[in-house]
Image (cartoon, helix red, strand yellow):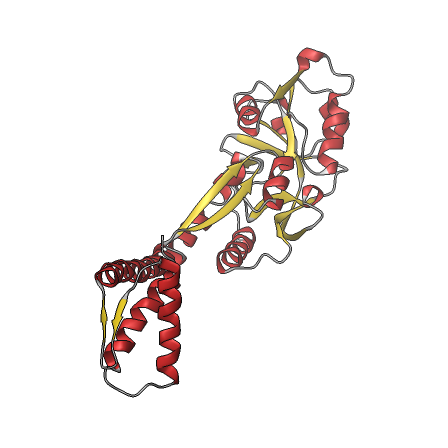
Length: 304
């Protein structure tokens, strides 16, 4: 395949030869003649018939001229298509979550981003915190929701809120009538549910460990994910402890603060140096979302 610059040089030589037919030789003529001679040497054929008065294409020159014109036309077309693709290409934006609660939480933000960035295509990843850290470092997600304790060390962390450590249970559970609970009370409670692998802020993991230690094997339900855990809790089969993401918990589940455990920091993490309009808009919208007032249906029950 002939290179683009070769086709362009040949096409320019034809135009130059036609423009300066019959004129006295100049430095420009010599440069064009040198280019033509080099091209003919490279191809091994004569492209021009030359006389003292005119220059015209040979049969091989006419054939090569067609190919050169096609190459130049394709080059122009490809540039135009690339310009069009840049104007209409989707904008990928990876968001990492470790819980279905977080997916529920970001829905209003995604709706707003769709208005602000019509070409945006979110890539939502629901995996463990450890996996999210790898995805963030590899650039497969641009932002992740996380607790500060689990935020990647080399990432920028932006706090959204301070979350209480709470016990969650069904409205029919014995714990539902309590205003507050202690770790000792939780140790004596009925069946307990916890996620595997254990992940979360350090105070939460320490509390889970205290509840599980010494408990009979059939009194602990180890769950593969938050969906399973919340199903067991909502249907009254178990209680659990978690950070109080109160605006994302399903109706019918009670939330009771646990004494002796301070609130934990919850927010967003993104790579150092990561800065583009979608990320800035996402961070700003999430910050506004978490400062909005929460409508509470009752003293303990959590709802969207």
